[in-house]
Amino acid sequence: MADDRSIFAVTFVIELPFDLGLREQSGGLLYEERAAHWEGWDSDEIRTVLQLPEDLDLPDDLGPGTRWMLRRGWVRSHVPLMAADEAFSDWVEPLVTPEEHRARQRTVKRWRKRGIQKPITIAALTRFVGVDGVPRHPEDENARALYELVRADFNRILAILGLTTGIWWIAPVADRELAGMVPVIVELAGPHDPPSAGDTVQRQGTTFPIFVHDLLPNLPDQEFVSERQFEDAARLLEAYNRGRLAFLPVFELLHEAGGDLRAGKPAQAIVLSSAAVELAVTTLLRVGGPMKGWSAERIGRAINAGFRNRVEHHVADLLSIEIDLRQGRSSWTSWWRTGYYLRNRFVHEALAPTREAALGAWRDVAALLNGLRETLATDEALRPLAEQMPFELQEPPSAPKAVPAPRPVDHAFTDAAASAVVQDDRD
Image (cartoon, rainbow, N blue to C red; front, side, top):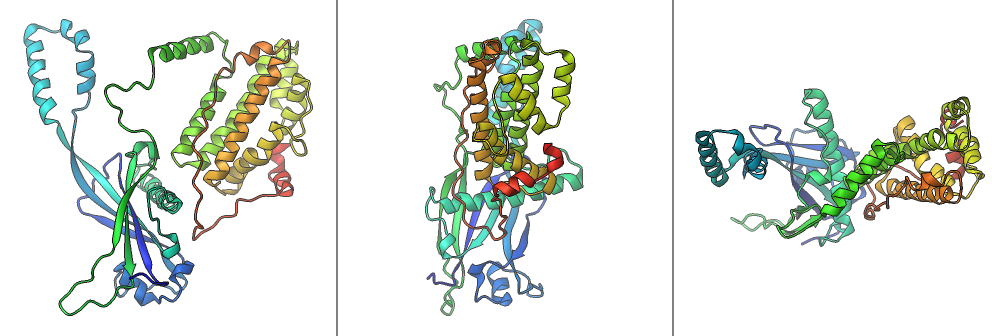
């Protein structure tokens, strides 16, 4: 029976997209500042609940963080490149002899039925929470918040493992590389009522899945991309190759930033979305300058100026508008106070943004680009550039509301702090 001291183990089970090659199961536990829900528990009780060695010295100020357990499993998979071989067999078969063709058909038939056995690594990632932190159903915000916490810790382990082993394909895992659903196991970890003589402790808990993304296997009759959309994409690429879609790399960066947000990588999203704005500024000056009669020397001075100077003076002059990055009310100012500030905090101060903050910055970049397109459309000389920004940005999904983390980082900022950070990079 749960009480105020009850501790619950919340475990997320994921299949890694690569096999770590572990012969036996492997596990570990991260320690962190002891959270409030461990109040009233002494170190001996914590060791008992977590089944830690009795001789393990657990300081009174530390408690359990993320626990991981890795096991190896086997699955039957298709033979690599078999689908490619079958899809384009009519291109290959005319190039081989009849004997080779019959041999190919026999091989394909045999392996289509059998497939191949391949190993995979499965990770069980656990956080220990009090009663208030227990997720109770798939849509519970606690579930997503805890998942993001364990995934971030485990991805750091994978990143370090890749660095120490020198194996390039061991790296952090994005949500889109996982199955669309992740099983959640919620279990009362302790304290347990003493069992009767001859009985074992009755385990109490439940399980349910949560959705981590919407990239699910499609059915044979489903069509996500039409032939017309492929043709349109090819037409736009041809326009870019002919110099008529100069802003394409800007939108590519922002699209990739949106993918990183969906994958749970807010720091990468901040860097990419900020780079999109900086690239948009450079592209605007390089392509728009000649349209306004600017000389090559003037364009060179503008591009080589400090970023704030580049925007407030040269871009503003080109667009015939006023831009005040610190005090204004434009979309430029909004992005400066969110995206550029968060980018500098990460790059220069190693302070990673939250997913919510990164999503807000992404929205500000989208608003900036939409506003730039509208401004270009009203300028007779620059109007052709507005036609080179034909993309409608699809907003990434909103981040779930997070529960307080044991290691909170204050990502709030004031106008004064925003204007003071990294002056040398702004001027």
